Length: 159
Image 1 (tube, one colour):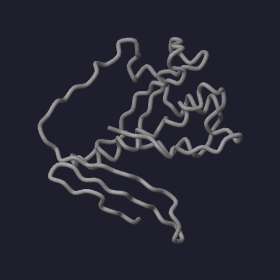
Image 2 (image 1 turned 30 degrees about the vertical axis):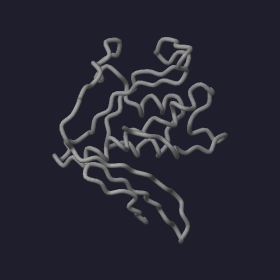
Image 3 (image 1 turned 180 degrees about the vertical axis):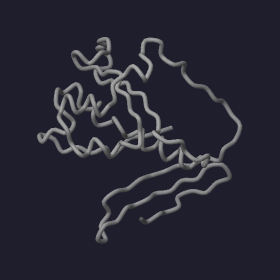
Image 4 (image 1 turned 90 degrees about the vertical axis):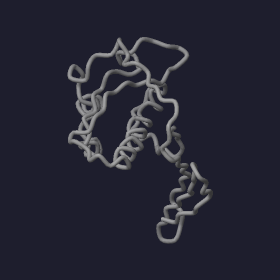
């Protein structure tokens, strides 16, 4: 990895990271960081129309039912992902013509995490990509692991 410092201020810093393989760039990431400081904080209330996680099937059960067993589904075994529903016909979510691609899942780790905040941040970054591709293919009626597609999440943002 080649890390290029772009900015170092009192509160904010940014880096460009390039992953190299055999001397060639295969991935580039821009990251911004902010020192923890007091400020506004809020969260949306838990949705009332969603069943609790213990009443939902696991994501692996759901995906195996739809697409069959595959070793790749088990890369998420360190997480307890519960499938609530998606916006496909019969996917369990009410129709919303303004947002055709939607999926709801509950997620928690299968083991307790250490108190180190960077570990929690890394898990959240990983989770942000977990269902991104499967949701993006929903309006097109094709499985995200279809042999008709070559897919990758190359550009998404977390705040």
